[in-house]
Image (cartoon, rainbow, N blue to C red; front, side, top):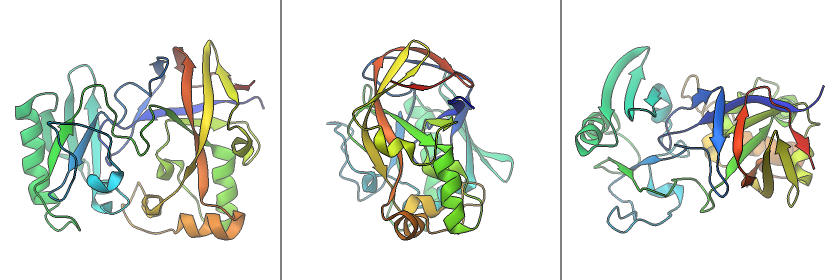
Length: 253
């Protein structure tokens, strides 16, 4: 089987659920449009909206510490910036989050919903135009090799949802762990070229089951015990932009 894109997703709000899309336009030097456009700061955060700069994920509500976020299913419309938060299949909050009023509606909900979080409030949805609230300072696309995820299942002896790794592109058709040799190399998807520059070291966020919000699996321990590292996935810069879609072939150059 030739390698291909199996799924594409972005995360409009850091820590909340994925938005799965069929196609996306990539621009040189950028990540996926809308990916981690927003984040939720807490009362102890060092992020200053008045002087925005990249900060580590501990400055925001995130699954590494705040698994309750995974009980919310987010629906985001990039055309209107409307965010709807659902709990158990029912909407519990909504707001047009590119406006102060819309963000305030989400903030008010989070104040009650996350009141028992490990970090203090207030919780505030923030945006910094031109900056993405990603786990690394670089603007990049994160890639997950599904064959590697299946190999992790050999160690865990239980299904592993690839969404635990919160990547942008799920790739099918490569050998397990082939991506470990991609750093410094390029991938082509149609007219798009991606240059891999870094492997992705995993943290406790992968413990959280995206379907149940339970910490039900120690992925980092499984990686270290089974493979001698804590890596799953890679980051790539967009070198040549263009459109890509689900099912498009992927070639290692």
